[in-house]
Image 1 (cartoon, one colour):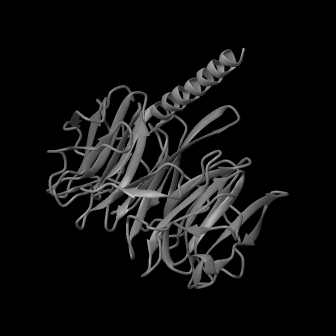
Image 2: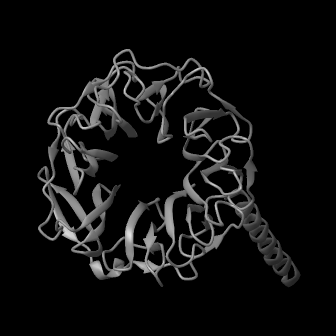
Amino acid sequence: MFTFVIMLVMLIIIFVILGTLVYSRGNNKRWVAVGQGDVGLAISLDGKDWEGIEGIFDDGGVGYDVYRGGGRFVAVGDDTDEVNVWYSDNGEDWEGVEGMFGSGEARSVYYSGGVWAVTGIDEAGDGVIWWSYDGENWEEVEEFAFVASGLVVQKTGGAWLAGGKKDGSDGELIAISDGEDGTNWEVPDTPPESGDDAYINVFYSYDIPQDSYILAGGYGGGTGNNIWYSTNNGLDWNTAQGEPFGALGNVVKFTYVKGKYYAFGDDGTDKLIYVSDDGISWTEVTLPDSVTETSALEDIVNVNDEIYAVGQISDKGGYLVGTLSDQDLIWTQGEDSIFANINTFHDIIKHPSTPFVLGGTSSEDASSIMYSDSGDSNSWEEVEDNPFGDESSVRKIVYA
C-alpha cells in the first residue's frame, strides 16, 4: 500500500511537470515593445521584467510599430542597416526582411484575414504599400501611385484602407482595396474634402443602430475638416460636423466608451478631446482646470469603460481618469509626481488579467516603461533595468 501511494505521488508530479512544459511551450503570449534607445525592441512575460533584443532598430534606429497576427509578430521601423521589417513566431527569435524600404523607413503594420500590410517611405521619399500572407515574403503594390507618408494601413469593415499625405490633387488622401489580397487599389468615389498637404493618421470602425461606419482622422490641410466618415466601406466620404479641432487641427486617436465616441488630437497648439454620439456631430470635452495651456496630453485609452488621458499634467507628468456619469465625464487626476521624469507618453495598454504597461520618452535617469498591477493612481512603478536605457523612447507596445 505504501509503495502504491509513493508511485501515485510520483506519477502526479510527473504529470504536473509535463503539463507545465506543454503549457510553457504553447503559451507564447508576451509583451513586445519597440522604440529607440540602447535597443530598438524588447520583450517581457509579465510587463515588469524586460529583455532587450539586440540588432533590431538599434545603433540610432527606431521602432515605430509592432503587431501580432496569424501566429506571428511583425515589427517595423527605421533601421540603420536598411532592414526595416522583422518577423518572429515567439517574440524572442527575429528574422529581418531585406530589400523593402532601403534607406527609407516602415511606419505602420497591420494584419487581418490572413493578410499583412505595411506602409512606409522608400528611398525616393515616396509612400509605398507592401503586402504579405506570412510576414516573411512581401510584394509591393506597384499599380497604385499613392502619394503617402506611410502613416496608417488597416482593414476596417469590409475593405482595406491606406491613409497618407495628399499632394494637392483630389483623391490621394485615402486609398481603398477590395480587401481580399491587396490588389485593385483605387481612390474613393467621393474622397474626403481637404486642403493641400492634408494627411490621414488613423482609421476606426464603429457601429450604430442599423449602420456600420468608418471614421478617418488626421489633418485637413487648414480647412477644419479633420474627421471624415464613410458608410459604405470607404467608397464615399463625408465631413464630420462642427469642425472639430479647428482649422489647424490634427486627429491622432479614436476610442469608444459606453455609447460615445472620443477623438484625441490638437488644435495646432493645445491637446484636446472631442466627443460624439454618432461619429458625425462632435463637441469639445471640458478638461479640468489643472490641465494648463503649458500641459500636454499624449494619449487616451479605454480601460474598463473609463478614459485614461496621460501626458504632462500641471507642467509635470501625470494622468487623468474620466468616468462617464450621467453622460458627462467626471475627471479624477492621478498623482502627477509619479510621472515627473517622463516627457512624452506614446502608448498605454491594458490586457485582461495583466498589468497596465505604459511607454514614453524619458528624461535622464528615468525609465521609459512603467507598469501598474491594479491601475490605481498611486501604484505605478518604473521598470528596473530598462533595456531601452536612460533618455530612451518606447513608441508602441503589444501584448499577444
